[in-house]
Every structure is written in C-alpha cells, then in structure tokens.
Image 1 (cartoon, chains in turn purple, brown):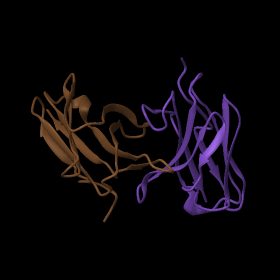
Image 2 (tube, one colour; image 1 turned 30 degrees about the vertical axis):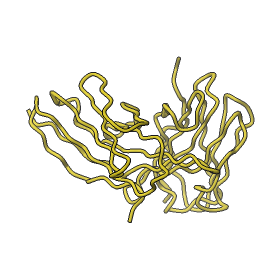
Image 3 (spheres, helix red, strand yellow; image 1 turned 60 degrees about the horizontal axis):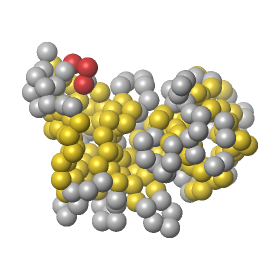
Image 4 (cartoon, one colour; image 1 turned 120 degrees about the vertical axis):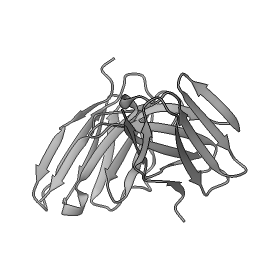
Length: 114
Length: 112
C-alpha cells in the first residue's frame, strides 16, 4: 500500500488567499484525521471523520477552517482566508477500525502564509 | 497544568545504554496510551501502544503504564543512533466525545 498521501507537500501563499490541502487515506481505513503541528502548540487534532462523516470538529480553530470528505478515498482541509498564524505543518492520518488506534500519518503539508 | 506533559529535553544517552522517557497526564479517565517517534522533518510513527497497567515489551522497546500515578513511560534498551528523534506521548480519553491529546515531545539524542 502507498500509505497516506497528501498534497501539496509545500505551500507558500499570501495572507488572504484560499488554501486547500488534500489527503488520500489508506484504502479500507474507516477513520481519517487532520492535525496541525507547530513549535508553539505541538501536534493538535483539528477534525476527524468516520466513514466519511465528521465526528468531532472541536479542534478547528476558526470558521476560516473547513474540512470535507466526499468519499472514502479523499478529504480536503480548506483555509479561507489564510493568515500568517496558520503557518504550520498539516498532517493527515488514517486508522483502520477504532478511532485513534494505530494511526498512520501522511508526510504532511508545510504551509507558509506570508 | 497541561493535559499531557513531557520533558522537552534534549535527553542525551550514550549508545548502548537505556533511554527512559516519561509522560504524565491529568485526566484519570484516560484509557489508551501511545508512543510515537518523529524524526526531524518527518511525520509521527507509532511505535508502542499500551492500555492496561504494567509493562509491555516489543523488541528493544518497553512501555510502562501506571494509572494510579497517571504516568506512562517508554524504555529503549541498547540505544542506537537511529533512535535519535522526538518521542511523542499520546493519551486518549473515550467519552461522549473521544479525544486525543499529544504531549509536546521529548527530544532524544543518542551519542556514539
């Protein structure tokens, strides 16, 4: 299996622009997670899905953030409008059966907002 | 008080020695505990999970859980330079809304 796939790997954008991050989970995994990692705040869970349905989005920092999972093999995290404080590494992860157990992380997207 | 606390390090250990990493958590309802390894510039990788009190061994790694004292530790025997990384402790609370909390990580350096 190719593992969790994320794109783009790096994104540099200007403040105010829309940013869309993409994720393809491991085939057959029921759970998909979006995380953000910064030096200041560490690794934080933003939102997670079970069978394409959002279960908990309490970690989404603001209304500027939104996430969708239109099917079992694709999810997006959108930031609109982006701000410099959104600069971070965004990870997508998936797990097979039980939420949070044995999560497999993608390579991450490094986002820089100038 | 942070929900999951780890010493940020760096923890420097000579090659071949035992590295001991510690993590404490505040919520007594926590039920599942994980150790992730993260190399610089890479994504976290699960190395150990533990659910009940006691020790769990996997190769050179041993996870120890003490729910009464609210700590979980990771021992790495025969430390190798390839073990140099940041180790993240993760705690899961299953309730009406399950959540996972990561510690800030301990940076481990194995010196030859």
